[in-house]
Length: 88
Image: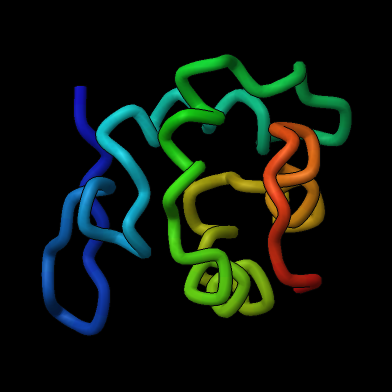
């Protein structure tokens, strides 16, 4: 399964969206709901080289809400993976 996102009419895969790795869909459970489980190792590996400023720009908007993503949990994800990132 692959996460496909349409952004401004352009369809992109998770792998090319903010440089999130191929296993980005493994992060979905860690960012949904008010008390999600910790991110998996696959999730953390997928976001390790991601463009955090790019992700923050989307997490600061309502873009991810349409996918059922809790943006507050999304902002915490890098820290939960031990990855330094900008403050969103």
